[in-house]
Each structure stands twice: as C-alpha cells, then as structure tokens.
Amino acid sequence: MSDDRFRNEWDDDEAGARLARVLREEAAGMNPIDDGLSVIKDRVAEQEHRRAARWAVPLAAAATVVAVAVGAALLWPRDDDGTGPVASPSGSTSPSASTSPSPSTSPSPSPTATGAPIAAAVYYVADVEGVGPRLYREFHQVPELEGGPIVTAVTEMLKDDATDPDYSSMWPAGTRLLSVTTSGDTATVDLSQFVSLGASFETAAVQQLVYTVTAADRAVSQVRLLVNGATPPSGHSDWSAPIRRADPLEVQANVWILQPLEGTTTGSPVRVRVLGTGFEGNVPLKVFRGSTEVASTFVTTMMGGFAEASTTITLPAGRYELRAYNDSGKDASLQLWDSKTFTVG
Image (cartoon, rainbow, N blue to C red):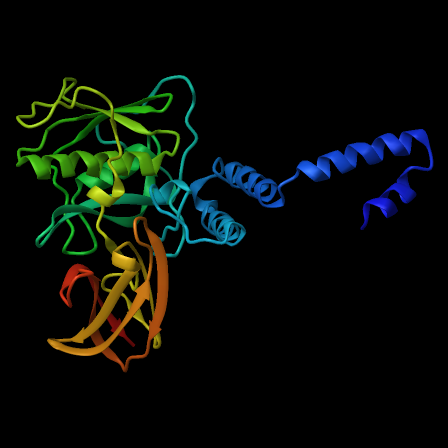
C-alpha cells in the first residue's frame, strides 16, 4: 500500500490522522525479521517452563522456525539449552527445569524417582586418537529423581552406563552425588570423590560434569564443584571458583552421530544425522559390513562452529557400522570421531 493511499484512508478526521502518523512511524522503524525472532523467542521461553514430558515437539518446531527466519545454519555452542539442534532417542529435545531465584537444595543420598521419565542429556568422554579426551552426549530416558533434572542427569552420569561402548565417565566408580544447591545462575554440586587422572583427563571430567549440569537446567551457567564439602583436591588445577563450559571447539567432539543410534534397528534407506564442525564443514561418512567398506558419502556442517546435517544411505538387510570423520584440509587423511553399529531390518 502506498503512503498516499494510506493517508487517504486514514486522514479523514483528526483522530485518524494521528493514528496514521503513529502507524507510519512504527512501520518505518520495524525490522520484520528481528520482531519475528522476538516473538519466536518469547514462545520458546514459555515452553521452557512446561514439564519435560511435553517438551519435544514444541521446542523442535521453534528451533526450526528460528533457523528459517535467520536463514543460516544453527550454531551449537550450547546445543541442549535451546540455542541449537539437539536429538534424543525419540528425536526430542533435552528437558529443562525452571529455577527459583532463591537458593534450593536437593535431597542428598540415594534420591528416589518422583516424576515421569525425562530425556536427560548426559555427557561422556572418549579418548580420540591423536586428539585426546573429548566430550560426547547421549540422551537417556530415565525417571525424574527427587531434586529435579540436575540430580537426575548427574546421577545418571555417575553410573557410567553409556549406550555407546566408546564413551565412558571419567569419574571414579562408586562416586555419589551428595547434594545440589542452586542460587541464581550457579549450581553447587557436592560429590563423594574426585578424579585421580592426568591434567587433560581431569579437566575433561570436570567439563563432563559442567556440561551435564548446565544441560539439565538452562538457568545455570556455572558450577561450583565440591568434594565432601570442600574444594577438590587437585594436583593440576585450582577448582575453587565456579566453572563455566569451556569452548566447545576445544572440549567437544568435532563430530557426533545423532542417527542411527547405537544398537538400533532401522529400515532402508537409512537416515543419517550428524552434528559437527570441520574444515569447510566437511564430514565424510563410511559404512562398513565387518571389515568391508560398502558405502561412502559426506555431509556439510560448519567451519568454526557446530551445525547439523543429514543424508540417507540405501543398504540391504544386515548389520553395519557407520563411521564419521573430519578430513585434514591438507591431504587425504581422515580423523575418525564417532561410530555407531546398527542393523537394517
């Protein structure tokens, strides 16, 4: 509608003229994309306070709308806090819990299940050849424990019960969660034991805990770690101050396979989803049956950040291993980051 036509329709009286001026001024200063994103963010924020069992579809849809509005791949600095793509065994997003501004303390020993199952984002560590320890994430469908999502996720992490046999917890067997206290953006987590490892693996263990805690409650951005009520007895680092997530490019695996999941059965064509980063975003994929390579392709993610990508691979019935790599960018060498075994039924 032209400005003149706008005036003709509204300027018949003084009140209409004032209204027309206001509308024209507002229209001139409006950024449709920014305003649309604000609405989306507001809607997502409303979803954050619903129970975890009702999270999956609304947040996945909101994330998709944001991606379309921005017109760019989603970055994943904190994938499971609503700012990037996430996945669970059912394709749902990770749950969150609202946090009261006043301090709250969870029951400490042997928390009991009090709620419906939630998809707890649990971080593990794998020692990547030529790279060192890196974080990997799984979603575990577990009953929510007394004390809420943080207690649930950390308790699950300490079990060292990853679905993928390549992942493990760095925390000593038998480590117990003694208490969790939240105040503002800080969660204080008291454990019964500390890790006794080299410096890089000790740091990986602490980041494993920090990533798991901050994934469970997005209102928490840092963790104060205690061991039996005191500063951890480290021979490598000072852990007395609250700890934030380290740069994901430095501590997370460069490539994760989101689908197919370890040990699952699927039809053909097989849908493959990865989240990763790498030189020019390139992620080569290879499928093996035993020791024989039977298929290969690639997807493009992101360079300097994390993004999700997907493809399909047609395979006959049988048992397979999918491997995901980065290429060096200098030669034809490949760095293996993740693998999943699965069956085509």
